[in-house]
Every structure is written in structure tokens, then in C-alpha cells.
Length: 517
Image: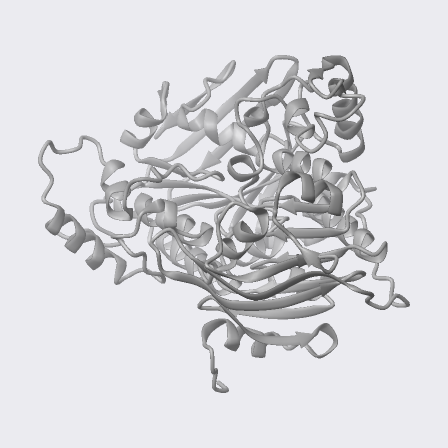
């Protein structure tokens, strides 16, 4: 029988995390935290980066074993020692970092999540059932597409689709909308909210967005520094109450103050008729031309999957272009590490743990990628000085507020936000002539987001040329001096910030030649 949104789920259990604590070395990441989820709950979990949100849900899922505390379902204690046991109990987690197998198709990844998996799979029947299921969803995923060729937003939709299709009764979402457009986010969260109202699902939503909490959640718990800082009914709490619980009543956020007196200078980055293929050999960037001047931010809007990733990869030297020309400071630019350093080209990539770091290396080593072969980190250009490398890292860790047990901790032990802070520290701590940034604030809390935006604006005010790719229109409207729109691999629209209209931009994000609504 083909699954439906309400099929197979006869009872949503009461789920309760009781007094959970977890320590990683000297870092107490979670300290006696409890979370109660009655049947049909839509519960938001708030907290700044490193507050313990992901640690809590990973303990609930069996990804981490808590030092103290336990999980109960319907009042019965359940010892969950691994994610498979949690999935078998009907609890699913959409992780902040994707867990899809890159070399497999979307359909194969969905079926892979089933337990047990049949020895012989009728793929035609499986695809037909998943396609039928998608008809009730607010989005559609190409089941034949390989994961390696999907944009971040498409991967996130697939993660959610997979959990719903496999009939999870409790769904934990770790920043699920960070790579979705506002309209997509509202569609997905609206669907899940409706399912909780029908008592076919309970949802835990980890988010940094007050708007999502207020619009969709019914209950909220706030964590700060690993402890529960407060909880309550969303309808009885104001945004100021939530902020005070997260950061304290005296919290002050950085401001992205624009220097209105400055005027753009010379062209620092110029892309001419750039054409590039995606991983399937299909044109992803279609004769893209743009120019960014010193002292300005050019923002590029667009729904994920319209060529932004491929264009950034070309600019970063990770993908070869089929045609076109790239110039920095008026001269041809070959995208080598040497030219990046000489000409001051810096990158803030999407999915930094996978695309800007080496998982198995330490925080200190990842912070040194731009200058590990320069004094004082090296002697005679070939002998690394570990003490100097760690001192350099310690200074950046303090300056950028990176939460890590030590500079020697592996980068993949950090929270998503702190991985982003690490890359930010590496890329913005030197002289920046050109900055290319792709969704730099995805998954970051309010404080980190305001800090990054303030630092980008400070770089702009100091004369840097910034090319900002973002799926967050609010971010572009706050930061950009000009806004362009990418659709189907081409720049189809451009407007100065002063005359930017959200509806007009949205229409161009959906069509090369939009018509008024």
C-alpha cells in the first residue's frame, strides 16, 4: 500500500528526556537537561551556538551516550544505544549536517533508511510509492538524482521527505530551514504543524529564528551554556523574553553599520561570460557576467540549485569553467592558492565542515590553512612550529569566540556554528581585498549572525569587494549595495538596494521573464 501522511501511524508516544548530562573532555556540553514531549507536540528548542541543543537530541537518538539521564517512551525507560534503535522506536532526526550517501540516488537514500532492507528491492515499485507520497508534499525531489549533484536546499528537503516517508512518529529537526527559502520553510513547517495537530506526529524544532518559533511552535525550551534557561508556552512569551533566556537580559548584539559616506571604487572582481557545467554535465552557469567594486557588497539571490554553487566552485578553483574570464584587480586570475594570498581573495563557503575544513585535523590546523607555511608557523618554509601554530589559533579562538575544548580538538567535534566561526576567523583575520561568501550565516544563532554581518560590513566599509550569495532575502536587503538574481544559471535581474522590492525579486527568482502576480 502506498504510504500517506497519516498512514501507518496509529499512536504518537509521549517522549521524555530525563536529566541528561554529557561531557566531552573538560567541556560540559549538557548539564541535567529534561525535555517532555506529549503526543502531538510541536516543541521549539532554542539556544545560541554551543548551548547544548544538538548534544541533547543526539543523546536522545543514541548518537551520544549520556553520562547521566535517560529517555522514556510512554513512561517506559528505553535504553537507546545507537541511532538505529531510535529509528526503530519511531524517532527520526534530520541532522544539521546531511547524512545522505553522495554516490547514491535520492530514491536509494530513502530506501536505505528502512529497517530491515529487503534483499531484493523492486525499484520500480519503490519509486512509484515515493512519487505518490510526494504528491501530498509541498515540494518535489528528483528521485533519480545523485546526492552529489543536489544543492543544499534540495538535500534538506530530501532528508525531511525520507523521515516522513518512513513513518517516523517523532521528528527532530536540527535547523531544517537554514537552506530553504522563506516560502519553502513556511510550507514545510506548516505541513509538519498540521500533522502534529492531527496527532500523527510530534516535532522538535531546533532553530535560531524567533519568527519560526512564534509562527509554528506551541511550546519552547531555551538552553544556555548546556543548561535549561527557561521554557513555556509560545503564546505566553514575547520575543524579548526568548532573547533574555538565550543571552541574558544585558545582551548587546553587533550592528552591521553601513558607511553611507563611502562610494564604490575600482573593480576588484570581474566575471565575464562564465559558463560551467554541473556534475551531470548540464550547463549550470550560463554566460554569467558580474563586477564587484571595492567598498561594495553585491548580493546574489536565488533559490538553491540555480547555479550558485557551481559559480562559487569556479571562483574558488574547485570546478573548471567551460568558457569565460575571471579577473581580480584587473588582471587574469588563475585561482591558485598563491594568487589567493597575493591578491587577498578570501572564501566563506557553504557547508564549511565539508567544503572548508578537514574533519580529521585540529581546530588549530584548520585555522592555519592560509598561512601554515609562513613565519612564525614555519621555519625555512618547511618545518612546522606546533607551538606557534597553537598560539596563533588561541588568539583567533579568543577573538572570534570559538567554543572548543582546546586548539588541538578535532574540528568535527565542534557545533555547526563554531565550525563556521572557525572558518570566519581564518578568512577574515587578514587583509581582505575580495571576499566571496555563500550563505555565511546558515545555522548560526542571533549573536553569531549579527557578528558575522557586522564584520562583513566592516570589511566593505574598509574597502573590500564582497560577492555575497544568500538564500536569505532579509540578509541581502540588510547588507548588499546591489542585488542580483540567479535563475537557471543566469543573472536575470539586478537592482540597487535603495530601489529593491521583495515581491519583484521573488518573481525573478521563479522566472526569467516574470509576470506581475
